[in-house]
View 1: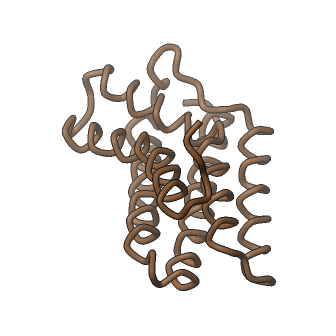
View 2: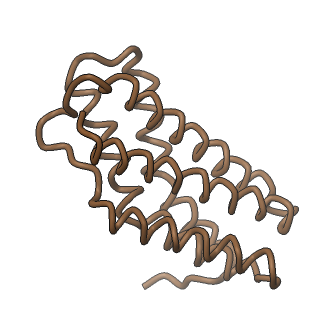
Length: 161
């Protein structure tokens, strides 16, 4: 794997850590929804570990064909977005609606989509240690957007269209 691809994956890892930090803050800010935020936090930590394992797995070879992490400028932009949210929630209070809106935007970023593609690519390559674990990770990632939207509906912040 070339240096640029490693940098892009490392950037994705940094985004996962930043998003996990945001969810950890929301655990403290919204105790009534603690379980919701804790689950998202734990899954982001798992995604980060998956990306670290991917670096280890492919350190001396290429990623599966057709699998490209987002370009570094997009990764940097996603990281800046997550860091800005982290800063915002540390300096001023946010409502639950704000927290859910921010989370939905984070989960819909290109970096998050890359993780889905990466998991699929690793699974199809045939060199994974545990297909069940990777399928579980993929399912969690795909569920994030749905769970956040469901919470928004339950709290009355989104209306059925």
